[in-house]
Image (cartoon, rainbow, N blue to C red; front, side, top):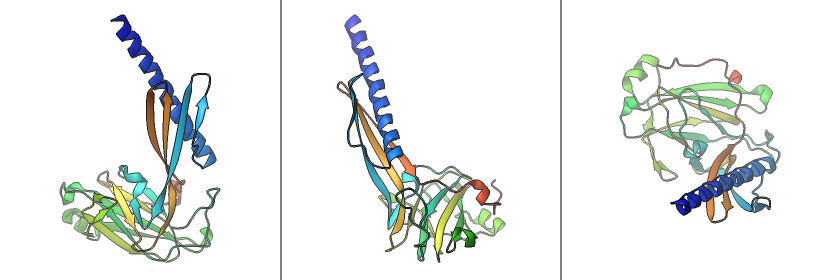
Length: 235
């Protein structure tokens, strides 16, 4: 029993050290903006390595497929960022953007979407346009929202609804779920969307114990004060 307890205590300590090393790898990758392939701490005999996966392309899951809480929303950037994370206004996006959401739990159990499109040739000329889509006919008619189109499979996940908006000199789109949390995806069709950030995966190791964590490192979101009012009142 004593040997078993000692082994358990040692494994718990190694697990904690491995997790701490993995977190350190994430922090260093965020600070440098690059993957830290290897790192070590001689003081406690731990190591870590990280990798970065860019988020972007013709289609992708918003926020790496994590649930977007209702009324909070997520930003999809339509202009690229430079190596320092600053906006590059020389390449605004002019195409059709399609947003996907919804599961099989029923029309009125799924979120409605408020979509805020910001477009212009610079921050000083930016103009906001708002759209609203709801799969629930009762809510839709009461709020004057639009009906969504049929969904599709994006990045291996099935979505039941979609909405397409035309974008000219697009800067950013904020998508806000109403009434419920939801997972979302976006697609530019055959057109490549700018990089949205990275998924950092870090593995820490102490003795024979490994701990792996993944963190979504999106580019910063616009402050909520930028969106001066809400189009809909949540239920």
